[in-house]
Image 1 (cartoon, helix red, strand yellow):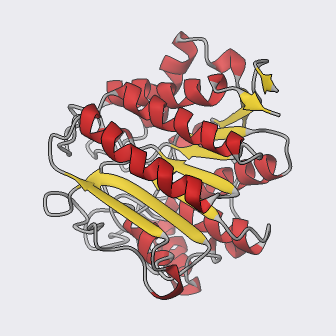
Image 2: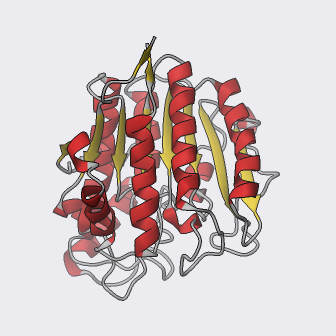
Length: 323
């Protein structure tokens, strides 16, 4: 039976999430949440969503993916706001530990709600910080909320088939290399070819190592790739997931793959993001659990953030539940 009644979809919104950003002159600005949420309210999506406050992650939770030494470094530099947390892309600022900790904690809160059956699907706009590694920041990403979420699904909920799907223009290298040898993590990533864009990884031959071999799918797209090519390649993602039969799907839906982003070169439409999210919801429903959690990822054009993420949220709301 197909249920068409309003879906239970949660979204985390609040100043603690909005505070994750690197100043008004930096591409990753604190205004990014407002770009999305103002458009969501204009479209009336807010009235259909269950709005939850941001949650701070515990140190124990952060260390499910990150080293204790790196967490100490972030805490230390968060007090002074001095220096960089990587090699020059990710500056420290006063309070960065708390801001980044709320990103991780909010993602975990959504995971717990979905796993408990309180919500079917969820969205966190300021999340999807997929470049952070175990022991360092990278590409505007301090803590890897996706990595912590995957580790939590494995360790706390004992899932053996977790799918991570990434349509951000940049390759999700922190997640890929963090779980490259893990047979329980199915990784599918469409992104601008690393020969042309940071971080320079995610080549088609990178399919995992050891027990994780064959559980990873990297699909580099040429600069200026549009919806036509994306939809063609997306069929590979769908086939990969249908064979994997994941118990939970995490979508990183970075808006920087949409046309006219200031630092990338792909030319997808906002509608492509909605179509991808709807596809994942249908797959999750066909598997009997419906668990899909989307996280905002990158995106530095205000209109693209607003339109792309609202397309994703609309898909989470409108794709029917199968029971």
